[in-house]
Image (tube, rainbow, N blue to C red; front, side):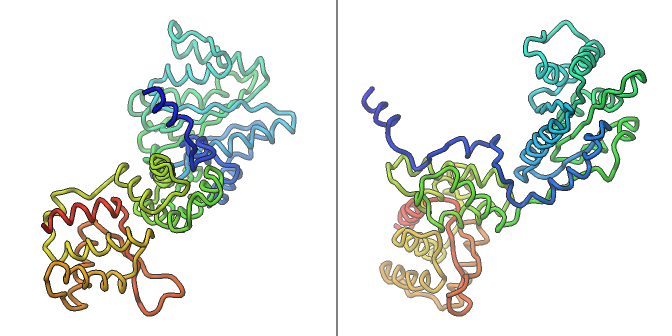
Length: 392
């Protein structure tokens, strides 16, 4: 047994740097988010003149909210340092710290990792924070990530207290700036007094990534995380196609990582589209046995032909012309008469509607109006085996 464990642990991997595929990793260059980082820089420029500022970033999962915030906040800290100013930046995940006390403790732990986690009220903790900032002659920039979790559980009190931090002591201004991150628009969840501390224009809304943007993000991660030639263009295309349904870069990166793991399990040196399909099936599969049983015989022939062709060619896509040829051969194997081209096209659209395949227009170099078919959800081998069983 120990030999088996050692063999697996010591075996080579297509992945050279696993950290790059971590959700918390922020690459040096954030692709397709320059405009948004520029917008934050414009909003928070007053910090360099020691004037506090509050803002919000909102957008769906996997649109780069946290990565943008980390990138920007680390940059402004370094730029301020060059000007002889100290900005202390603290990032709090409110999903993990959803009460005022826990969130504030997270801020204080930045200054003193041994600060006791009980025995202090929120007003007392705010006083300790004031002393820490005075001692360092520093201003504070706090990011409340998933801020809606904090507001839902504890209301707006802490956010209000921090936005009014400078007003407390007219003797010495200590600027505290807040950046709230949320999937939802958090402003309507705040009470009127807290809303008044946020400018409506200080909101950055992120849209889902497009298919082409996801392609660029996946390509960048492949270059950073995988050995040279360990993944071909087809796989990057397929991952971008699959993730574009949600516009979610996190999902794309998870697919990329699991595709690498699937290749490692087989001890091969290259990731193939079949590994990507296996990763999708494991992560989020819409293909079920019962859905397959709902297909009629010629729909099954059509799906079988696509899976068979993809498996044989080892590609991510098959064009409709090649799929139709394979369909005709499949029909003959099962002593059935192939249906007309129009009927075949109807079967294609029906199994696409049922979620088994994706269609996209072919690129340059392809004749006519042929479409490319991909099987995004499950390995071609598994599909062909399951359909074979049903056809028996």
